[in-house]
Image (cartoon, rainbow, N blue to C red):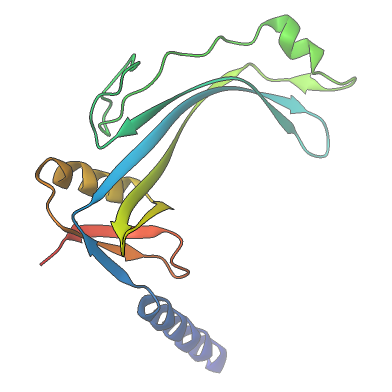
Length: 166
């Protein structure tokens, strides 16, 4: 029983420390990007651990929710635009990378998104990785340049939250 109390107390203290060590920056000079990427990947199965090989990739930079030049599809359910599909790897390309005794999966198309937010503070441009929720808040506020309060992560190297400033 004491072990459970100690663990619970430790968790509460760590949470309080984490919350107290985040800082907030308020600005109306910001933008958000979402880099949408398609990548063909093949799994080469070799015991004890499989290996993944990436083939062709295409990417498209979304900026503030505005349709980027070169967008082929979109906006999707998250308001993102996507590039053209990269060429699917051929059987020969897949076989060239195969080692003896390996089995090979069918190529799969991966969709990934990398979110970033940038803002100007103290005459310096800051760029940090972020998440979908922050990206969407910036997209909604950007046309009117509504001041936003950005909550930075523990080491001040990510933006964890964005909300309209009071």
